[in-house]
Structure formats: C-alpha cells, structure tokens
Length: 63
Image (tube, rainbow, N blue to C red; front, side, top):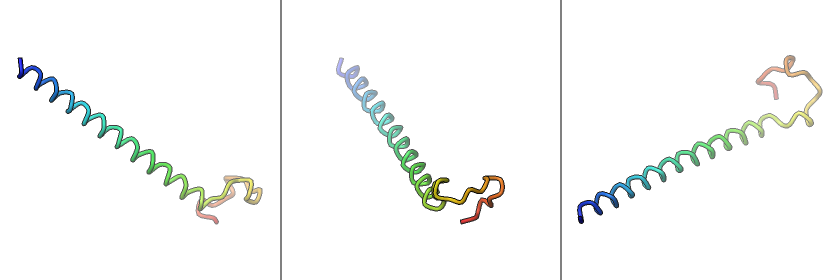
C-alpha cells in the first residue's frame, strides 16, 4: 500500500513541476514580447505625433 501512495505523490510532484515550468515559460515569453513592444514604441512614436505621411511612403528605418 505504501508503494502506491509513494507513486501517487511522486506523480503529483512531477505534474506540479511540469505545470510550474510551463507557466514560467509563458511568463518569460510574455515579458519578452512586452519588452520588444516597448522598445519598438520608443523607436517609433504613435501616429498622432508623426507627420501625416502614408505608411507606404515612409521608410521602415526613418526616424
């Protein structure tokens, strides 16, 4: 009977460890995406602050 409980507890901890790793990866990915978005927004201000130039006429590297 003890072996069954040991296996159940072991499986529970493995599952918990897997879920924690999954959540950590998700949080890291979201943090990375938000950091990239923030950096892009710093480089390219919102459209309302720019001159009224169509997107096609603008170089992607223009300030």
